[in-house]
Amino acid sequence: METFINGITSISDWLWGPPLMILLVGGGIILSINLKFFQIRYLPFILKQTFGKMFSKPSEGSGTITPFQAACSALASTVGAANIVGVPVAISFGGPGAVFWMWVVAIIGQATKFSEIILGIKYREKNKEGEYVGGPVYYLKKGLKNKHLGTILATMCSFCFMIEIIPSISTQSLSVCQTVETIGVPKIVTAIIVTLLVALVVYGGIKRIGQVTEKLVPIMALVFILCSIIIIICNIDKLPHAFGLIFKGAFTPVAAAGGFGGSAIAQTLRWGVARGTYSNEAGMGSAPIAHAAAVTDHPVRQAFWGIFEIIVDTLLICTLTAVAIITTGVWTEIDSSNAASMPSAAFQHTFGDAIGGGIVSISLLLFVLSTIIVIVYYCEKQAEALFGLTASKIIRLVCLFAIIYGAIGDLQLLFSLLDILLALVVIPNIIGVLAMRKEVTELKEEFFSNPKYYPGAKTVNKDESFKA
Image (cartoon, rainbow, N blue to C red; front, top):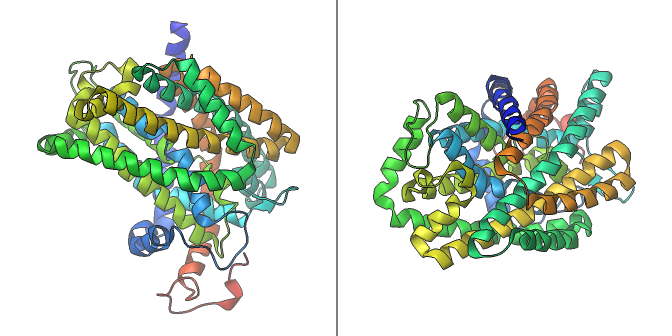
């Protein structure tokens, strides 16, 4: 078994070395250049259109759920174990410097996620149940000029995404089971409770998922953010040192200390890029599956919510988790094999064993619950696109069994296996998005040159207005 785990880990480490770094970071840079770094130039307007309109209902456009519900559904997938468990895993194996590379991937990934959502809206369809559906399988098949290549990439992406879902769900399940166990609840009990709660929601379809996540995500995120800020304030004297470790560790090896085994630059990059990608999902093609169902008058307006998700998920929540872990010093006290318990230890360090462990356990339970709900939906839509509606209902049951399996899994093995399958999803999706970057740029220019959409526009070509 140890040989198998080492083999999986070696393949995972190689994939998330130069191959994926070149594709993800290089692809994000190409898209950012093509889009003239819009994520920085138009940031105030983007924030106004997202944070400023979270509870506004769209007056125009077609779709199944509201833009905010779509964003919450996508955010529910990104804000999960990746934030509370993925961050300490990155720090455990890559050192504090991994956090810096998570930031880099987040900023560059905004252009990637923006592009995916635009394509997801442009090429979405209505299924037999009257719901809007979309995602990589649709824009790769319909958008690429080479239909054969599009079909191959779409099938590969969709099939790998569907397989990747199983270890993804198991990882989420194991993360919460391992954390809740610290307050005396057996893993299998937690897994069964999560399975039942997920089943209650996913059998209600995308409308119920949207209704649940739009209420659950803001509450759970706010509670975790406020508690993390309290921890940082209590350790404010260690804050400069924490950021020093993050910036220094990004470019220099970190020596072993306590339970931390040390890390080389390659490890820091690998874990930062991998966990950053898993956290914000830029490049995975998952976000457009949720956003394709949104009511919107233009693909670009809905794509702004992808940037909103990355800001909340990686630049805010992941950063707070990392700083709380580093300032309390638990990253050097706990062995990497128990990395999932670091946030709980950090919270217990400030709030006491019972309250601190309870806050993290409840937060992680809610985070994971919302994440798995949306992941199951993603998996259903991939099965539907490949094999039809019946297959989507069968895969739903498989996903529910994956939650139970997570209670008995191995954290490092699951994360390594997840990274391999994640890579097989990212590769065809990024290739397709890069091939269609001209369409993304044209829609972006159309939006920002039309006063109907962007008040600062000076001219408009009426023949180019997007038909929602």
